[in-house]
Image (cartoon, rainbow, N blue to C red; front, side):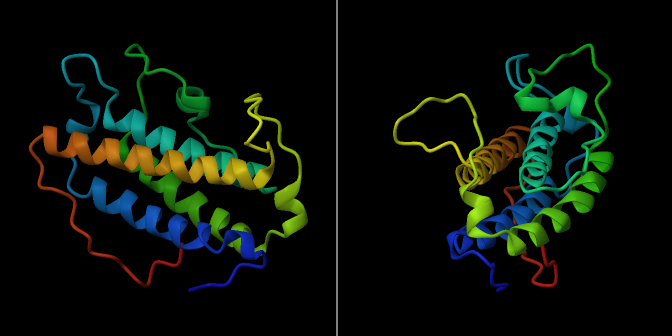
Length: 174
């Protein structure tokens, strides 16, 4: 395992890499057509979930000092609600964006200092037990990625795909 400069990220580094693997495995075999399916008009579709996952990756990168812009931000920014009038990007386009941003964010996570992680980052939550700083924002993004991967896994089964296989690629370094 790579060792981060900040020991505060010892738990984040394996989680980030695990999420990268889960992201690809949970999407394995999903067709473009099925990725746009909603269940009884009540659920988000997989494309929206994938876009929201990527919005988290780009947000993490931005708070850590990267200047990468998510090309599909207008569809997914800050958990924007699904809008059926949009022509959403394809699963392939979103996967390409994932492979672009993920190694950049991963490398930045390895380099970030304790001082940078402690920097104030107002989120408007105003919760006494939750300091609004960069470290906690990164943690919130990691938590959101977990949630979205689970949602995609559930959609996978509802759409009659096999359950996700845990075929980790140890050569993928992000």
